[in-house]
Image 1 (cartoon, helix red, strand yellow):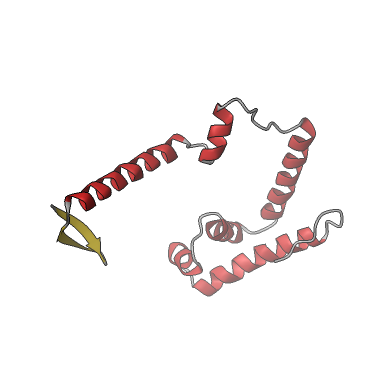
Image 2 (cartoon, rainbow, N blue to C red):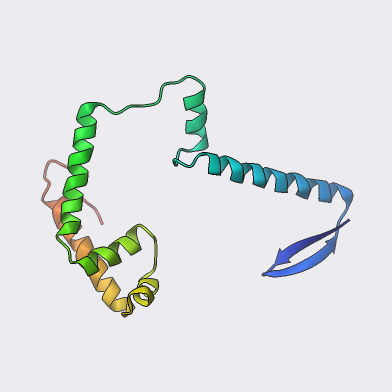
Length: 142
């Protein structure tokens, strides 16, 4: 049987045995099933968490105290971000959350990658100072 595979971005037709064809066909079906399963878990839970949740084990629910602490910490972190300029904040979030490189951000913002690096480092320094000034917490290493 003949199949088409991609090698270095180019499609190549290859003659394979029936067994190999069946194996590849099963692998394609498994890939499709996995992709479907991942789309099903749109809320970000891992598949094993889904199994635990659906087989009767209780889902962890945070206590009111944990919720308040989490909200306070989030508010403090957002306050650090609000202490930055809009440009610094935008560049930092593009780098930290979206995973863009300095060069990619520079192209989006119309500036050099060095200007982006300086902005990201300024925000990073503010976060380091924030964590250093919290003696009751674990020291920030970064």
